Image (cartoon, rainbow, N blue to C red; front, side, top):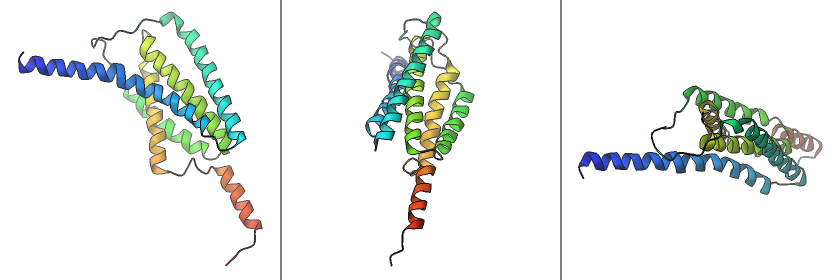
Length: 184
């Protein structure tokens, strides 16, 4: 084997690994993160909202699945199709993901859990299904989903405590502190 052949084999192996292992694991990871949010609920209200978000996300995915059924195809593990990243999907998704996390900071913690679980469940399953089984691969949707996950993570980097205390929780804390006597 020549160095060019070794390089080509290594590049092809790396590409197949990224295309058929890493990307599906990231998309499936979104669903697992949503599910873990349900298990980490702090109170009964968050648990109820999280469970409702989980089931609503599954229902949305089933509707998406039935709608896209005519475009179903078995997965091809070859490199020739390649992965096309729609850069505008990533940009739009990143901005939307950042904005969504910023927006939910004004809601109660239970609603945040419910909406995030719904989004993660639907987006993760629908993107994974599109990536593996749809003829068109729906590149904008997949890129947008990955971009929204990126935007949400960037929001958590910039505002790490934003999901720990939401706007409604801050109002309750301030109302409780205003009525309590100060101790020095």
